[in-house]
Structure formats: structure tokens, C-alpha cells
Length: 255
Image (cartoon, rainbow, N blue to C red; front, top):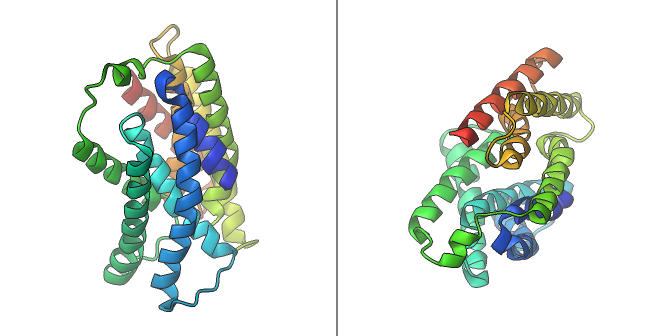
């Protein structure tokens, strides 16, 4: 999971030419601080004591909170300073576990162990944070949107790391070695395969920013399957979900 967070998400944002190095460094900073803070916040909310004890499941749950921060950071690359990134990480981790423990599990009595809640929360939190920070008026920020060959190469490698480790993340919150966890991992793999094939198939060549469309759309299957990964979907159902998600993602990028 740490490989997915640091190498995968960090290098994925490296396609921004002016902010590739800072994207990787800030992602590393978020993981280093956010994982510790997430362990503490989740521990306080679950154990209700200052003397905390941790197990492997606590690290998996904490990494989900950090993953949400990294997804949000994708909207803010080039806008935030290191101090702003740290403050955002501390605030978002606290909000993520408050939403999970107090609202979803406490108020709604929804014990959601899927990853879909991570992506939904991160998406809306990122939109809100982007609205607060406002648009970038710096000329360097505008130049940073344009990627080069080497930046997109590193970013594609980051996407591959995320792709390879995504099934472990989807099944990480379920009981270790259980049939439910194995089913979630298998369904996630099939969904990723479906979205990857579809993203290559429907992407026209040549097109503007072919890399962005193919690379990120190939991950759409893993995101879409998160809510039902532990269901008996059969391979065809998982591939269909991934394919539809990849198709929608490609359409959004082309639009």
C-alpha cells in the first residue's frame, strides 16, 4: 500500500512539467505526516483512550485516509506551498475519519468497508479545497499544465504502480485471508483489465493528451468496482463494470 501511495500517486502527478518534482516530494511529505496523524485520529475515535495500540488493520485504515489526501492533492498541484499542504493533510485526515466514524457509521449506521467512500470524499473535498484556493494566476502555473516526454513517462510509470497495487488496497480493509477479501481482489483485477482494454480501444489516435486519457481511464475500473468488489459478480460482471467506467472516463477526458 505504501508503494501505491508514495511511488504510484507521487509519480502519477509528475506529468505536470513545472511541478513534477514538487508533486513527488509533497506526496512523500503527505504520506510521512498523514499516516502518523491518521493512526492517531482513527485510534482516538475507535479506542477512546490516549494509550493506543495498533494492528495491521489500523495501518490499512490509516492509509485510506492518506489516500484521500493524495487524491485531493491532484486538484491542488502547483497551488499549495509545503506548509499549506501539511495543514490541508491534517485537516482532511481529521474530516475523513469524522465523516467515516461519526456520520457514516454513527449517524447512518452504514459500515462501509469499500473504497468507494474514499474516492467520493476525496473528490468533493478536492473540489471544495480548489474553490477555496481559487484559480492560479501565475504564468508558471499555466506553463505547468503542459507536459513533456520524460514527465509523462514518469507519470505513466506511476499509474502502472497504482494499477498493480490497487487490488491490494481494495481488499485491504476486509478480513485477511477470507473468501470475501479474495473475491474483492479478483473482481478488482477483472475490472482494471476491462477499463484498460476499453480505454485503449475507444481512444482515437492521434488525439490531444492521449496519455492522460488512457492512463487515468485505465484506473477507472478499480474505482468503480470498489463499492461492490466483495459481491458475487462473476468475471463478466466485473469486466463490464470496469469497461463502462473506462468508457465514461475517456469521454470525460475528451470532452
